[in-house]
Amino acid sequence: MMSGFKNLLTTVFCLMLAVVLGFAVWSIGAEPSPVNLPGHLSENLEKSGVEHPVTAVLLNFRSYDTLLEIGVLVIAGIAGISMARTSSLEDPELRTSDSLLYALQRWFVPLMLLLAGYLLWAGADRPGGAFQAGAVMASTGVLMRMGGIPMDFLRPGTMLRLGLTLGFSVFLLVALASVWGGEAFLAYPPALAKSLIVVIEGVLTFSIAMVLLALFVSAPINRGVEPEEGERG
Amino acid sequence: MTPSLLYAFAGVGLCTIGLYGFVRLAHLLRKLLAFNLIGSGVFLVMVGLAQHHNGPDPVPQALVLTGIVVAIAATALAVVLIRRYFHLSGQTTLAEPARGNDEGASQSGEDRQR
Image (cartoon, rainbow over all chains, first blue to last red):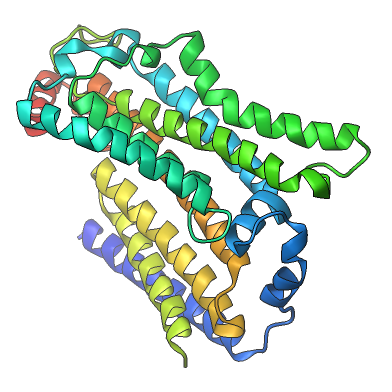
């Protein structure tokens, strides 16, 4: 009885939310847009140092968002590896010894790394960029881990933390350097914009891949009966 | 009514379904999926509404791209936390653990996991 009432209440609440949201979307959609963002963007695109508008927004016009984003990723990655038991980050038991997978990844790993590099470079003038490249790199790492290639750098320690924070610290350093040079926070000098964006994207790719991979390996399949530091041992 | 506006309305629908699932479903992984559904709905509304006005708009697209990456990382962190929670408590919901048959609940949880 009680659960039926709750169910009804939730349904009514959700339907009300749908109506309100739908009305909001409808009324926003009916009005003409107050600003012409794509117009502004295409006017200023050549100042940004890259040709693709999305990359220009991500790494130049709204780079503050991207800086905060990589900060969030670093926090998530560090929280993830501190949740895992230290020994399980590189547990030989978790490797498979599938010979087919092993043979496949000899072909796939170099190809995927190449693809990641291409995506990173393509971000300048077509869809692509640090996040796509980082995702491909992370999945390469996942494949390598599944296939049993030992990855010592995933041990919790200096190297892993350095890898996690590299992108964020380089990005922040560039931002602070532009402040020190008398510009606004995160305003690149126009002459250096292209090379700065390439450097930032490179380290971002690396750090994103490390964060995603660290989060993947820090949730391993544990045997349930292993002693834990909880109440049950 | 343009196709872009249809995307925005689909996003509203996803938000609603996601919210319903988030409130009603007990299993933590299902809650996580429902939460991601809400996020996807928000992304659709953002991109769809902006496209409706100006054609493809790179600014909300870039913001949504940022949001997607953060959502992936948050989901992965949530999975890590859920696994940890399952490991410590032996249950997959946030309900109060039943006193007395803790061991049984934990055991059946592990069986389900395999």
